[in-house]
Length: 598
Image (cartoon, rainbow, N blue to C red; front, top):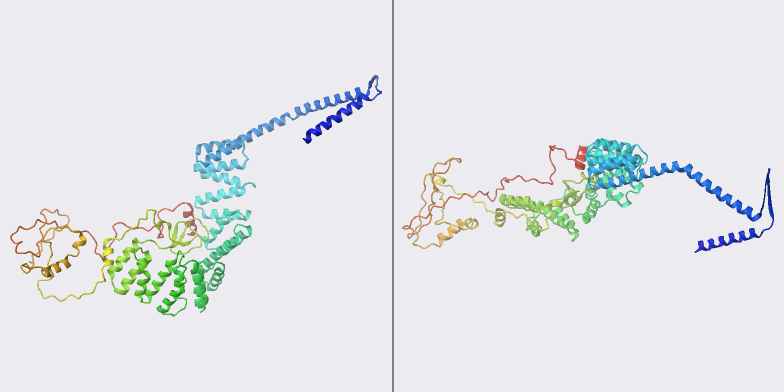
C-alpha cells in the first residue's frame, strides 16, 4: 500500500513538473561554430531527456557485451558445481545403502566436476572403504589431513584405518595429534584416554580427563566418578610397589566416588592396617548400601585383624542387616552370612540362611551347600551332587562390560575402551529366556540330595575260605519285572520285608555258588543267548512249574550317584577368559585392544 501511494506521489510530481516546464515562455539559442540552433525551453528539456535515455540504453548494451564472457564462464562453473553437488549427494546415498558400483561412479563424477570440494574427497574415501581398497582410502585421508578445512576429518579417517590394520602405535600418534589440534574433539580425547589407560599411564589419563572437563566434554559429576576410577586403578597397581602413593590415591578416590567397590575395599584395607577400624567400617558400609558385593563383605569381616570366626560372623550379621530389602544385591548379604557361618562351624545357621535359595540355586549357593555337606557330614557323595548342580545352576553376578565378563574389576572396557564400563551384574548370556526354560538336575542328583547322609558301617570279618565271590548271593527276580528303574532300586529293602511277611509253607532255598564263566573279549560277538537268572525265593507250588522265560541281561550305562564322572561332551564357558595365545587374532576393537595391552 505504501509503495502504491509513493508511486502515485511521484507521478503527480512528474506531471506537475512537466506542466510547469510547458508553461515557461522564452527562446533558447545555441551557437556552436557555424551551427546555430533556436528552440524553446520545453523542446530543449525534451531533447535532453531523449538524449539521456539513449545514452543509458547504449551504455547498457555496451556493458552487457563486455560482461558476456564472464557470465558464460560463471554459468559453466555453476553447472559443473551443480553436477558435482548432485554426484556427491547421490554418492553419499549410495554409500549409505551399500551400493559399491554406484558409489564409485558418483565419486568419479564428483572428482571431475568438483575436485576441490571437501565432500567430494570424503565420498572418494568412503567409496574406497566400501570397496575394501584401504590403500586408496588412506591416500585420500592423507590428502584431507594436509588441508586446513579437512584436517581433523582426515586424521579421524587415518585413525580408523589404523585401528582396522591393528596399528596401535600409528593410531596413538594420530589421536594425540588430533588432540593437539582440537582438545574439544570427543573421539580423539576418548581414544587417547583409552590408550593411556591400556598402557597404565594413569597420570597421563588424569591429565586428559582434566582437559576434557576444561573443554566442556564432561560434566562435574562424571569427572569426579571417572577420576575416582583412574585413581583406584593407580592405587591397585601401586599397592605392592609404593604403598604411600597407593594409599594417597585410593583415599582421594573414595572421596570422589564413595560407592566404587574396589576403592572402598582397598581404602578399608589401608584403614584397617592403620588400626582405624571405625573409619574402615564406615567406608565399607557406604559402598554396601549402594552396591552389595562379596568383596565388601570380605573386607568388612576382616576389618579387625585377629578376630575369631564367631566375631566375624557377628560383624557380618550387622552388615547383612543393613542391606536394603529392595536392593538388587540383597542376596549378597545372605550369602556373606552363610559364608561366615560356615567358617564359624555354625552349619545350622548356614542351612537356615540358604534354605530360601536351594530350590533354584545359583552357582555360589550350590558350592556353599557342597562345602556344608563336606565339612559338616563328611559326605563326599552329596557334596559332589551339589557340585554337579553348581555346574548347571544360574550364573551369579560378575564384572561385566559391553558383553565381556571378567573375574576382576577393570577401569576400562577391553571391547570399546569406555572408561568405568564394568558393572556388577548378571551376564546377559546367562539370563533366562522369555520361555523361562531352565536346566533340570539329573535324577541321581535328586536322589543323592533327598537321601539322608550315609552312616559308616564296619564290615565283620568273614570265616568262609571260599571268599566273597562264593558267599555273596546274586539276586535275580522271580519273574520278569517291568517296573521302572526307580522302583527296582529299592529291591533289597522290599526283599527283606517280603522275607519277614512270607508264609510258613514257603521253602527258602539257599543260593548255590556256581563257578564263574570265563569272560569273553569285548570285541567277540555273543553267539549264545543270555542265561536266565535263578530265582532266590520259590515256593513248593512253583517247583512243578517250568522255569520262566530267559530275561536278557540289561547293563544300564549310568554313573554312580556319588561319582560325577567326566561329561560326554566338553563344556565350555563363554565367560571364562582364554588361557594361552589363541590361534587367530580377533579383529575389530577386541583384537586392537588385546594387541595394545599385550
